[in-house]
Amino acid sequence: MKSGINYSFRGKPISLALVACFLFTILLWTWESNPIAATFRSAQEWYLMPSEFPAEVPIGSTGTQKLEGSEGKSSTTITKNGTNPKVNTVDSETVESIPAKSPEIQYNQDNRSPSSEDCNYGKGRWVPDSRRPLYSGFGCKQWLSSMWSCRMTQRPDFSFENYRWQPVNCDMPEFDSSSFLRKMQDKTIAFIGDSLGRQQFQSLMCMTTGGEENLEVQNVGWEYGLVKPRGAIRPDGWAYRFPQTNTTILYYWSASLCDLVPLNVSDKLSDVAMHLDRPPAFMRRFLDRFDVLVLNTGHHWNRGKLTANRWVMHVDGKPNEDEILAEIPNAKNFTIYNVVRWLDLQLDSHPRLKAFFRTISPRHFYNGDWNTGGSCDNTIPFTNGTEVTRDRSMDQTIEGALKGTKIKILDITALSQLRDEAHMSRYTARGMQNSSDCLHWCLPGIPDTWNELLVAQI
Ligand SMILES: *[C@@H]1O[C@H](CO)[C@@H](O)[C@H](O)[C@H]1NC(C)=O
Ligand SMILES: *[C@@H]1O[C@H](CO)[C@@H](O)[C@H](O)[C@H]1NC(C)=O
Ligand SMILES: *[C@@H]1O[C@H](CO)[C@@H](O)[C@H](O)[C@H]1NC(C)=O
Ligand SMILES: *[C@@H]1O[C@H](CO)[C@@H](O)[C@H](O)[C@H]1NC(C)=O
Ligand SMILES: *[C@@H]1O[C@H](CO)[C@@H](O)[C@H](O)[C@H]1NC(C)=O
Ligand SMILES: *[C@@H]1O[C@H](CO)[C@@H](O)[C@H](O)[C@H]1NC(C)=O
Image 1 (cartoon, rainbow, N blue to C red):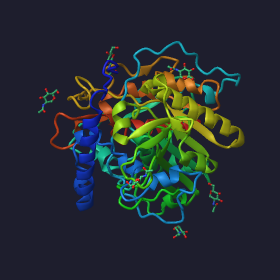
Image 2 (tube, rainbow, N blue to C red):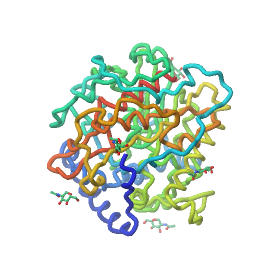
Image 3 (cartoon, helix red, strand yellow):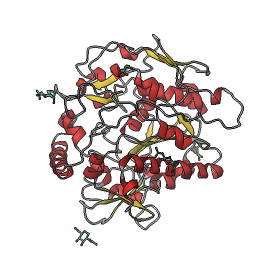
């Protein structure tokens, strides 16, 4: 982890916002006129663009915000059925660094007896396995975004697909889609988080179908108000049901895990109140329907994203005036602790809900950052070894916030850290040799392992 590279937009927020607006306009236009072409946009464009912009402030509608406003009159009616969502739309995530050293935080030592449930799945090693990947990168077109499908790019090396994670002292049953579906009979599994959460969602859809086309799977996004708002690039999430077992898998985009409410709903370019102390309305509203919930956040906590999205920090319903809290790491920490506390309290009245917080997915930009020619060109696996021996998470924020709660840690940071060769890398865009995606992962790939660890713990 290049922890020294902690980029910041401080000092040029205005120009970024302008660039972002411009790119968004172009992109929207391109998309409308040629959806396919839009998928070949440059990586530069997708990093710069407040891509999830359309989700926050849908053009010509209040889209997300209707839902986000949940308690008020603004609640979306969720009777309208959606059309098949476009999966391969714009995405962008920028990134943060993980502190090189993790402080001495004690692992969550409550008084439950040690069992495989409590073992540390994040400690172990990568082993070669010819039964990987769990689905073909040439398949799964139904759910896999083309932008993350490395087999569909010019990439020549795929050795990264042939490993499995072996925890050192936990039971790790082989993933099997029919037993997974049986286990999840009549259940709903929800991912709420940023685009890395969306990768994990797509991965689970592919794992569950084995990457085969499956026309029986129903699009039930409408049940959750996940319908593409008029003029928007995509809905705020997707939900699919496997009718054989009545299992639902859904994803909702909430990159900050904050409630987002536009300050002026009739103004498309309105600032958006980012309520640091309020979980996303979608989560509050639909929590009752979830049996498994997987949260994540992290890569949107930087000044550039906040400015580009016009997110204005609010606390206690009012604009935040606390300058210390306004610093990004503090705001992020505050939000994570808040959402964790809220969810932990909810678990008392939702005994069947299993809640997980996934730790941050590491990025691997070398010799620069995402916007200064940073790359991750290594194709040799495990140059830093195959093993994780540490007991504590590299993600001290999430680990600290979960301590003493009933929410489980899905600790994927250190094991993913060993896989710098498995990102989209330079194959993310055409003709942009200088621009690599060393944040998102190829699929099939590392997020499949996150799901194997998740399923083992459900
Ligand atoms: C490998 O370890 C070295 C030394 O700890 C570190 O500088 C480097 O960033 C690591 N590389 C990866 C891919 O994690
Ligand atoms: C939406 O689709 C579902 C499943 O296909 C159907 O049962 C339901 O009646 C539809 N609702 C509307 C409002 O069209
Ligand atoms: C499907 O599962 C849901 C719970 O997620 C349950 O409420 C519903 O009754 C089930 N439907 C059928 C047809 O079994
Ligand atoms: C909200 O936005 C609309 C459209 O831009 C504008 O006409 C109106 O004055 C704004 N309302 C407030 C309270 O600023
Ligand atoms: C994060 O917030 C918690 C709760 O307020 C606090 O105890 C902790 O020290 C904070 N951590 C950091 C790194 O600021
Ligand atoms: C690539 O990025 C590096 C570092 O910012 C820069 O020096 C170089 O001129 C760039 N090359 C191209 C072709 O843009």
